[in-house]
Length: 413
Image (cartoon, rainbow, N blue to C red; front, side, top):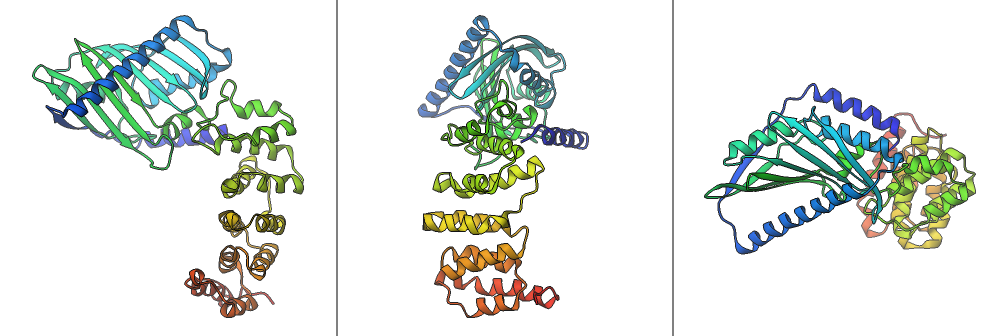
């Protein structure tokens, strides 16, 4: 997503903040657990501690890429004001490296607030954002945990609108652990927020992992899952030739956010200016299973770049290419004609009629006509044409749309 759009979204978020009152956490206490779940608790606590100590070692022996400065500054704003209430936040050190997911950074800050003082370490990759809070604490009862969490975490406000149920695990001597999970999206690769606190001998190590797509991508002004962040791909791509952009576009995706990197590259290509042959190549030179997604990204890239694009000019050639691929391109054909129906015109209608005549991707063509056509001849054709059983039930819907437009006087002579 381009930085200008991000800025507008952030302004909207801050406006909403001023109109929303905080919500409360909800607690449930568990005094005993099964052997299997106890083992899971121990393993996750140990995993958190191991990773945290590894990050501290990195901070003590690494250097920070100057090109990451802007992103680190944005992460500090995210930590101080957006997700947490830490006005006393003071940066101690940072380190960057190229990890398996791409450009990665770690930052450490100190804080001293009414609810407690300590350090927070942010571990941030293109796919993961994770915070580690380490601090002395006294957690003997639910009230102690509540004072900590409500003092630290921004509640009931965008981007997370957080109000989770927190599970407290305790022994006879007091709280030993608490955790929570909030699901924001089942479709996103990282659509949940997780929180874990492990308390032992007066010290707390708490991890909070917000959803990358719903929280940090907004604050950073960049889409998640893109390896190049120092500098961000959108800036880097401006230095690449069209040939390199095309080569990079053909690379297989290496993250769960399969379209994000391609979308940035497509947007840069669109800004350069493309002839019809180049645009057609972008529509069809993608894995068959990704053709529908590619079509949507191309149209979206034109919109973001502010460049007018009339899809109907290319529809006949795109449809012919999809026909050559065969039934595996059905979803792509339906997708591209669905997009075209947002800008109805005679060229697109002619392409839809041609597909019906060829008996290929009939649903895509008929659906377009049902949304866009105002021709009595088309209505008559749909009334009499033989349809496969799976399409017969849509005939009435398509006819109604066309006849409604005819009755409104919007018919072709």
